[in-house]
Image 1: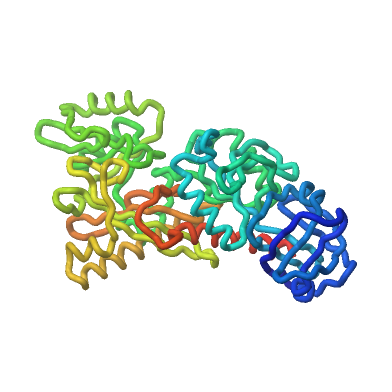
Image 2 (image 1 turned 90 degrees about the vertical axis):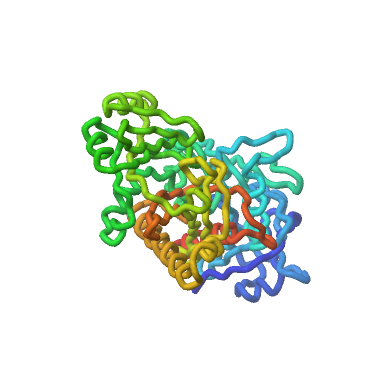
Length: 454
């Protein structure tokens, strides 16, 4: 026997102990009148007797009492459901949820800068028949329902909703992810076998330590050490003319320092300063100032790369990768990021601009070389994603990988991001490819979970 997937409209009326099902669904599921089934939504379930109902399209009719018991919101679209023929279990869903710490605006009923992405995600989910809601972690235990934000047609409203079948982690605070409350939340999900991705933020030091284990990647990894002792730091900056000092958990090009060795000493530049530079004549003074500013935060020191430039602007490539329904990594987009003149980084948040990766390469090289470099960058990103995710026990469904070319056109792995930006960039007919990939990956996790139950 197997699990059958269908979509149907759900109406709330009728008798408490009965579920009325349109005849074509009854025939497909091989159900007879008065047969008993278990109707399941999230962590809630109820036993109901089957009755046929005439309808022009696949329909379920259940009582308002059952809807309340199951914590079902008003579903204005045909929703996916799965029927386990062996167990006579009918599951409505998957109920997908986005976990976020983005502040909710009570006045507008929106989630600020994340709103466009959430609306796009919700709309695509509805096309697929998947109810989607937004929630924050608020409890260590799920007792049949969760407080979440459901979209009512004009705004998100807080209400009781079914426990999610799959959770997409968009927490933006590293401190919150390290909190006891978040760890309790993860334990509660694990206790009910509810998958969550992406697992968490990635430390630059941890990423380097994982990737450097793979011999075929060593050639693409800039020399890197933790910012720790003065002796190690001194040896490192003596060995490399240019180095970058980066926060292990930093993002968007913030709080990065560039050190350049000169005859007079070391010139320090900061990613937040376009014009100001600082000269240090001794390692002791340089280390002391850096240590004072860094305090107890985790930083790395990385060899500087003589990057490919365009009009005297630094360039790197951001590759967005997503997991497919078959759990394989694929490239969703590959773009060139061109830094603002005078900045030591190319991040868009630091004034950079974005171009289609292939078009940018074609503007610099002939067609054959542009294609070769595009393929090499993409292949390196795919291998990096496979190796990294294979070494982690938590789930990753998407990764942003930054790769730069040096002046010899050799690619270097610069950074990995498990929470790629969701700012809307570019134009699409309806849904950006990454939105489709995220939803399809969530569905695959749900179906995998369903298969294990059967």
